[in-house]
Structures are given as structure tokens and as C-alpha cells.
Length: 428
Image (cartoon, rainbow, N blue to C red; front, side):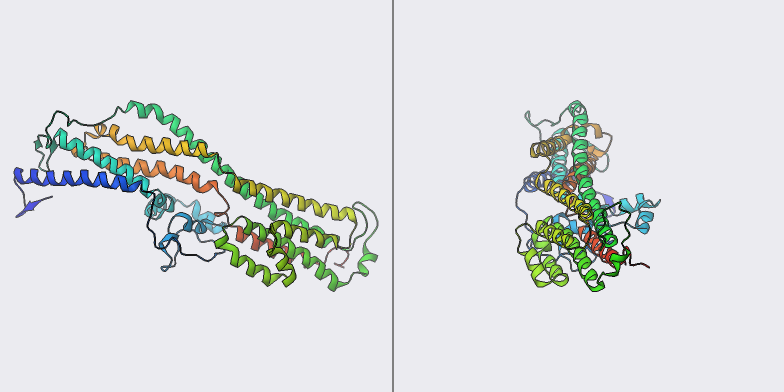
């Protein structure tokens, strides 16, 4: 607002200021639209290698002020989404203040930061449409006085599109987005269930190994294991069951490494294996082409060494078959995205729809000053609609947002505890 001595400038001066402002808007909109679709992004932190971070209860942007900007959104922020909920987190999750908290933290959302270029592009188109129509169609100054068009020519006319076509296409766009998000969520849910099966069956495996150790009778046999238990060497038992526990953990830890980016987890993986396994055992797994398979093989050998009836060993080995299934299913999810033509068509449909929407939204906002409310309306619509597509993209590859390190730590601790129990025939 141009003021002179506390008073609004005369109409002539207001007109000149408005002309310069409108021209600047047109130039900025044209330049920013081109820049928004540039394929290059200068980021001095993009090549910075970040150390692997174990799963924790913290969720959100990094709390460390020295963290690089690349950790605030995009690939760098995915490690901060590996959240494990406990009772306290659920209480906060369903708090009556959740709506206020979600709105107040909107500017910190990694999802919205990821779609910043797209929102900038559509908003720039809205600014261009608004500025052009004001220049060729007349405008109202700050004092409420209407003025003639600044560009008077037979070819200079207001630009716009009928809103009907966008209304007609809206249901189709909605269905595409719904199917896209559902497909991505189902992939995340399937990956989480695979790790749930790992947790359940690692406990099952070690429970049966501990309870049946030294029992040479077949399952369902009436023979008592007490005489056999008297011949059990406690040190040998501790070692053999400890090997089962260690290789159970080695398998899930190798599976986690197999499904994680190499630059994030390789060093930590090698260090953890060398700290828990013997040098020979650790090297055999590390040097293997397919590490989870090697760890699973070592677990099979450890089970075979247990002194128990072969039918009981068969029951233990059924868990290993389930591990193979969860591993293969996870590899399928990692190597096979949602069909690319479906994802690309949805993204193209949404981008085109939103980039053309400003042309149809100028007239509906004629009740606002020079239709200016079209600009924030387009910005918000773009933010939320592009955000839905971004959610689907982030969920599509689930392993880098699942707390797999936390799962591995839990499995290792549970198995170590289970094999420490006395077992069948030794608890009296």
C-alpha cells in the first residue's frame, strides 16, 4: 500500500504503482514456472553420507541442529519415520489436541516439503493467470476505483477455461488417487506382516529348541525325558542353543541389511555381526553373495546339531521355511513397484489437472478483490492433492520406513532370553 503523509496517493500514482506491480507478477510467474520444472536441484548436502540410525520412538525432523538440510525432507527424512508405538504414543496419537497439533506443524511436514516444487509451479500459473486477466480486463485499485485495462489490444483478452470439464474429471482423478494410495498401503501392510511373522516364528523356533533339547522321543510319545536330561551337559546345551539364538538373529539382521540401502547400513551390519559371532562365522555370512540365505543355512546346521528326535527337528525347520517365504515376499516388494504406467498416468493426470485449474478458477473468485483469492486457493488445493500422491509414493517402498533395526534388536533379545531358560526336564 503506497502512502504519502498518511494518505493514499492520488489515483494517477496508484495506477502507476499497480502497473509496475502487475508487470512484475507476470515476469515472476513466467520465470518461476520454467524453473519449477527444471530437472536439476542444487543441494550441497545431497552427497553427504549419513550414518545408520537405529529405530527409536522419535518421529519427525531431526532434533540435532547440526543435521544437514537433506535430512529435513526427501530420502534423508525417511529414517525419522521408523516409529514404534507404545502406550504413551497411542495416548498422544488419539489426544483431543491432535487436530491443533497437526495444523500447527504443517510447515514442518516432510510430505509437503517434498511437493514444494509442484505447488510452486501451480501457484505460479495461478499468479500468471491472475496478473494477465487484471492487465487486460481492468482492475480495482486500493481505494475501490475501477480502472481501464492496462493492455488495450484486440488480441489481448482474458484467459480462462470452463469449470465444467474439471468437475467432470474430478471423480476419475479421485478414483486414481484412491487406488494409488490403497495399492501402496497394501504393500506397506504386507511388509509389516512379513516382519511380524519373523518376530513370531523366531520366538517359536527358539522356544521349541529350548523345551525339546535332549528329548529323543517322538512328539506325542509317552516316554519321559528325565533319564535323558540327566545326561545333558549344561555347557554344551548353553553353547548349542546359543548358536540357534545367534543365527536366528543373524538371519533377521542380514534380511534387514538385504532390504536397506547399502550406504546406510553396511558398516553397522558388519560391525554388529563381528561383535556377536565368531570371526569365521561372521566372515562366512559377510562374504556370501546372498547373506540371508547363508545365515539361514547356518541356522539349519545349528538345528541339526541339537540332540532331539528328528521329528522334533522337522517341526523346528518348518519355521525356517516360513523365514524363506517372508524373505522372498520382501524381495518381491522391493524389486517390483506398482506398475510404472499406472503411477505415471496418475502423476500426469494430477499435474495437468492442477496446472490448468487456475484458468478455470479466476471467474469463481470474482467476489474477492481483483479475484486475488484464486492464488491461495490454488496453492492449498495443490498442496493437499499433490500430498496424497506423495503419500502413495512414500509408502510404495516400505522397508526404509519400517523400524527393521528395532525388530532385529527385539528378536535378538527375545531369543537370548528364551534359550536361557532351563527347558524340559531341567526345571526340577
